[in-house]
Length: 205
Image (cartoon, rainbow, N blue to C red; front, side, top):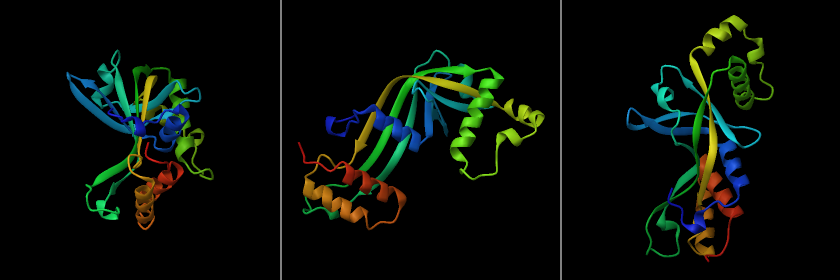
């Protein structure tokens, strides 16, 4: 990923936070000699060593994914930045965004107990704390049949890149003008970008 130095996320704990908060990812690999991508949730394990996920078995991506260097992309908030918000009209439009790229190798999960544990972790993450749904309440025979339709995997993390493009290449005055305009837009991404910009507000170096 192209990362100018002022946009680089150098604190890996920040990258982990982005992964956890934006865990619906895109996983890229080579399949039959061409790029192939699947959109799926990927969970960071407690040791920050692996990402864990599940393919639908009819998805051919998992069949030749071993022994490849694969890429998982986590998209954080993003939004359009209008030059009309600046103090001058000598400017062009741009896009502010946050993203993390994770590189590594995939190990398929063939142990049923490990697969069940990973599925349970996923349900616990996405179900509301007061949800009445639990995998433990599902008939074991029914659940075992459903499990045959998925292929679990772990992505061993070899390298992480993070980028937060938040107008750091502009003056403080211009960053503040952008924040003011974004705060007027009620869309979630604009609100999240404006909040991140305020947290990272700093002079152009």
